[in-house]
Length: 427
View 1 (tube, rainbow, N blue to C red):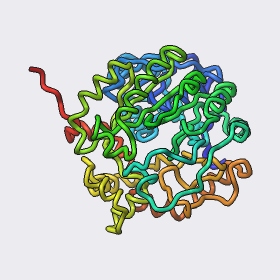
View 2: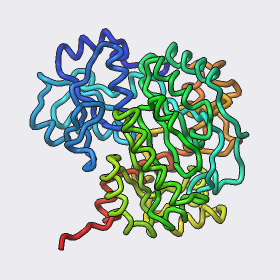
View 3: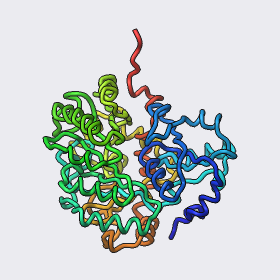
View 4: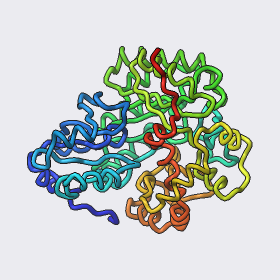
């Protein structure tokens, strides 16, 4: 094992916590995984910490979410222990804890150093849209299409749990639309039966009923959105606003009927042309009780970021994305290069395609870029880690700072700094 942390032994972690309250820093995907994985080892979390303004004072899985300032005013190392479960900002948070007098290994640990990987499983190797910001719509080469069967998925999950017992959540998407896989309800049921959380993301722009998916009980459901009406259809290329809106209403209804505890995240991508839509999006989320999250719209995949950064030609769809972006690639890469010494968030994220092939990185897309010749069921985690750590491609990516590009796009502080979302003035 290349990544070692003494606290990855549950007995050591329990002894280190020594009866203190446990707070998870990060009230999103990684934080949900940490809560479940800790609970499986007999460690019950007391609450969450998160700096996002949209989450302060709310709750997740019946645990309250505190902002960092309030937390450090109220809690002490004698009373509490922190598990950092934040992807983009784990290193920043660790530094913040140390400035507050909390010691790594004694008063806090990083969840990503306990588990081996965060698993992104593309159960669908197809998508119904061709969005201009996504490789499905802007990249010329693709992996072969197909769907993962429930039987294959079950074998995959068994291997993950054998090899990586700190796993808490499985993400059932990456570049594919999971609702297209007819086996999705059974896949979600298998996940639940194995004692894991499941996360799905959908464009919700299809004439397909998905009540059975909600009945199966996914724990986290993300909706991808990039505007209202025609603005939405511009960047969610091939989508239909009326179908999307009707499906949002259906999702709210299905959740209330079958799975009220399911967390629904409405993920708004900020472009230049859709900024004025934000107030309507907020009102819709308030009406349907969805959690609204947002970030600057990114140009995906990282293959395109690399082309733009070196001044190489891109497809017409990628060019159109750049013309509509509020935060341009050149501005993103200036910031990314300044922080290129910071770690790669994607180094411990593993993208497993529907056919069990292992992609080199979850954010690089071209099928010519491979990590191992073996499929996931045939490869050991040590082999996968070694291949990633010794990768010349990864070295060049980090040398140029490309690995930090999507961290910049997701920085909510930058949204505030640039006034990316218009502030509604009270009359």
